[in-house]
Image (cartoon, rainbow over all chains, first blue to last red; front, side, top):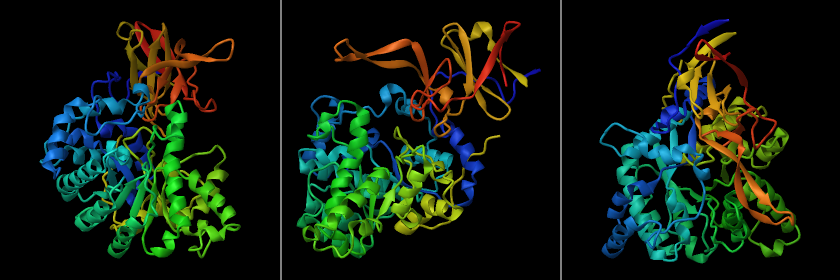
Length: 408
Length: 121
């Protein structure tokens, strides 16, 4: 037996510093081992915390009255304020240490926004070439009681994001937030921002109470279709929803809520024949995992065969329309029996319709290996799901541009 | 087989830990309740640094004689270390995952010799 200290001195863990790259060191090692450097990986759903930049974002609010209101109430978080918040426990009672250590991350002054530096760090660390960046607290803005606040914040955030982030970093792209509670403002948003650099589509946060088949949205869908810009529905929960309020633990409201609103929107989207009305409009469903779609396809098909009169616009079974839409993977269910996952992939037409997502830095983020390590996928399928399908969806260059750190 | 230096005994107090580099990967060495425990610093979930998170006792639902729920408490006798990436919890004494008992971290032996602590790879 020999005594030695290989590879440097033992490390202590003090919880007083954070670096997105080193915290993901094991992911970088896994990425190099799987040769991610050699092919394109696109993350269709990642986040930053726009609330850390509220001072800047608020300065972009067009209405001087709402701008003053936002600025004045910013210091009153937790009490009566303009934006409020959502009850939740994404940090698992402090167990997800990056959530509370994140503020200690140091970045060099590059002249660009801090979020660009930290985002590129974790992207390189896990092997991502391009990421579609979304906000975090604004995922709940669709339940704000004042539509004009949603509109004001959406326009301010989108303009800030375009000018301060997307214009300065080609690897960071976004599908911009639509203030869906105001159909006219939604239309105007697509008109005003659809051609901005880095804007690859538009996103509707799912927790809200206006149906997607309302006639008021048809001109927006038509405009998106004409512009060739996709629409996506990003899941989240609303613990104040009458049904979800029956749950008493975060695991419950999260597991159900992130499926529930997208199940409702998808059902309305298909049953009302929107795929027939907008056959070229690309649609993506984000952060509901996969099992909801596997289930809903079968439920709707089963009823459709008896109740075609309820949805006369349809010329095919509901599942056939759904199978032409795109689904982000995270949080990807990993059943003990891999044949169940394989069947789910088959049902969703994964080869061409599934697009990998991380949801980083949120608590239940996924790594590319949830796809790459599946034994039932061949190399071509893996690369399609990890990047090829998203490149086609967004119109991205397929040349890898990332730089995964190398550890000895 | 090799002994890897972890710390001087006096420097590794109860509640402390060290991460040491072994030939192929890292090992987390904990001193907890007077004993040493060492595990591969590689979460069985997605490979996170499982030994670099917080320590949390097992959370327990308090169910009364009449089967009613009476709140929650920490069971301090069942300490977990928690992977900081996603919150997977591991039993300090066994390295078994709290959420999936079929998954466990590779365990390593720890020895004290000559006033120093070593982990055996």
